[in-house]
Image (cartoon, rainbow, N blue to C red; front, top):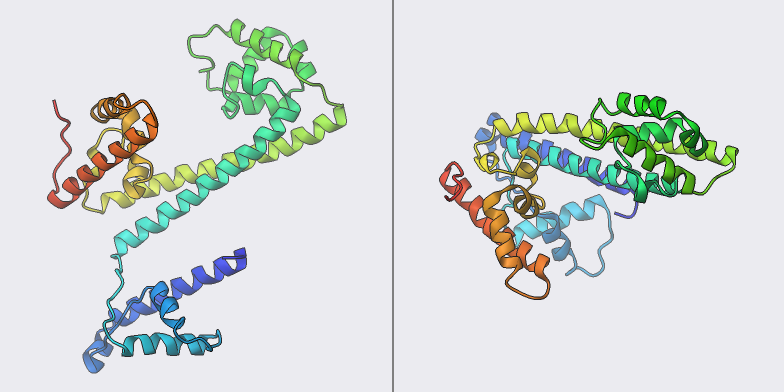
Length: 306
């Protein structure tokens, strides 16, 4: 699609098509009286068929005629129409993917602003840029205030904004010392510029928090949806509801979280001198595809090999 408007229009059009299709398919009186033959045809098939007519204009009436003509030619195979449960699952996973894209874009924008406000933070900070404590610090303190604020006061602020889990086993004095050093070594901005960047950064953080909260909310919906679908993929260590629903980058997750797949990955990783990661990940993905097929076709529970 060239514009967001076209994408929305197509999405609405596809939604209306689904409504019409299932209304007709499930209408007992119509099917009983007229013996309806209902087809779902892939738009690419129609588009390629239309190319044989070199002088046809583009409008709804012509498109309807082309679809009908394609059916008259015969050998029309119905495109797959997933059941309601799977359509719902697809809708949820696609929206979750869009949320992930929004989060990624907002974080990229935020990192540019963070560099302007606190140039040494991403490289020298003792905690991640997008932790709760880090975002609160960037929203409420200037570099000068970080340097001049008492250690205990700064520690209390960070603890309050990290649910008292800041730094793990690292002493708080060491964390504050590293933070103050990074602040001293960063570029200083004029107060009015710093204020403008801080305000923009705070709004960007708000966007990230919102999209993350929506993603968590959608994950809960996804868990409920998965319970209604007969499947055993969720029993595999390292595969949660999102990966079960979308099967996206599952091989990479398995090599991190599942001992069996981790050992297989590193076995393949060490077999060749070049392209180690790419080759090992592809082979791990192929191994996982076989597992998915076995679990879904046989309805078995995953049992790691001993």
